[in-house]
Figure 1: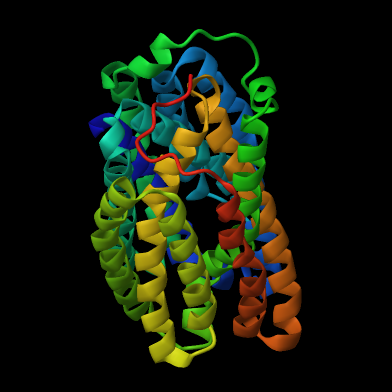
Figure 2: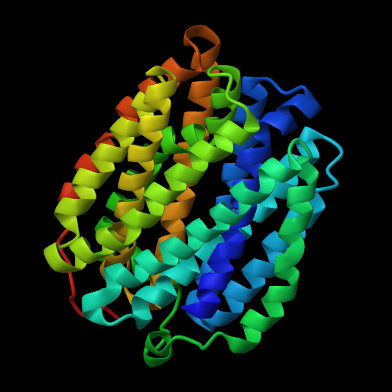
Length: 380
């Protein structure tokens, strides 16, 4: 947990830096909403590269790929500080997203495999809290540095010093050592019953991302342009949203371990998609309240979904299956970004995000087709 958690902290710091710095980036490069949508779409493509890397984690182990991922996104973070144009920044951030997604999927697989069966949800919630710690560091640092967004990316290169330590100190998973690799992980996932499970979770990830990807990308842009909030005010809102998230992770994991995965996952997914969409069309007060609810419900859902997906997949292909969810989420996010970018020109950014929310809520309904797995032995 210590060394996988450190990797996740560093990963979330780099991902948060772009969102916090986006208004300043847009100003420096004179970027419009459609241009930023294209930036976000290119970033989402980075998740596609995490899939072949995650298959290596199923074949060669979790430890090496987590360390490689930390080194990869740290190099991309440091390079982003010197990007001469929006296009070059987009390519560097795309590389960073690839390695961030790799670390997220492999670290989740490792923690699910190593946690006691009755505590998997709580173990994933601790990993999620550590991810929130990376965001917390970013929101504390950025108001001090704003509008100098390049400095925060340069600071993100610190992971280069952590990567070799993670390689040396992170123990390899015992569950992965016990299984016998018998061929391609992706081929295994195409067999029943894994094929249906992967398809449902992939579809859920895709449709939910139609809303969450543009909502996350345009969060600070909407707050600064439509609501006229200052960088300090935005950081305060993010701080309290993060606090709501932090106090929600552990209850989400506890309730999931006690009452199951299926019902909490459906209710929480439906709740945070509605709160996300509503926060962009209810004024400043609604924006703040909606973000608090959105953060709390989405954070409570994180350990539920992390433990559930881990229990649904075989150990021989768990990291690959987790990465497939990231890939389909990226594709859904690309579609959402492009649609929101087009609709925003006619209806405004807030209304465009509400329309995306109508698609996203169907993701909660898809989860009803998955079996309950709470505390069951992990399939090999």
